[in-house]
Length: 233
Image 1 (cartoon, rainbow, N blue to C red):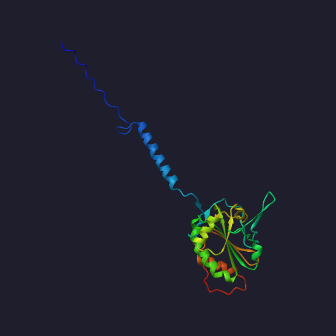
Image 2 (cartoon, one colour):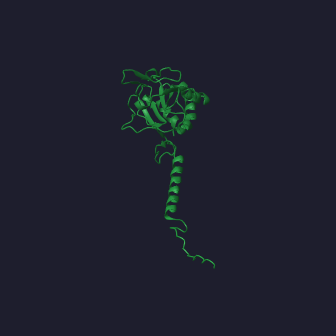
Image 3 (cartoon, rainbow, N blue to C red):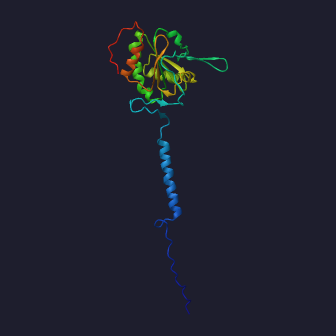
């Protein structure tokens, strides 16, 4: 006698939250999408920030490397010397790439353009041809251009940049940032225009084009300098 066959019981399949997918599977998929979006934002975000240039000048995009001071240097003030007395009693003196001191006192009677910059700073890189051209054009008319590099690793790195782009003007290496802080700067580039008496005539945050820099230089040249016909910006 044949054994009875087991009865067949139909069990309907479990329905998921969305189609065949369970709520847990939907939740895990959603978390994966969120993690992917966050990762893409993180790897594409810029490492630094640029100051808001406002609507007046779309070229002015200084690279922010520190908090804005409560009050910056003002036109009409005497430019601080390029040295700082430290808490340990020593004095930090700005030097050029060869270790020679740079002193504003030695430049009285000249127009001085101080440019805080860095080799890795995009607006500084874009501005380099302007500095090079104007340093050459006005060097015989009483202009002394001092590029002060900040947040660089070694003087040799800055020297390599200067040699590559044939920068003949004075370059100071502010490894500690003491001079940058004394001038209450917080963006790159920052420009300080100083007249032959050592008085600040203008402070500019951000890069300058050829016309704008030319106009500012000609306003501070020594009286003995021959007039130029370059148009103001």
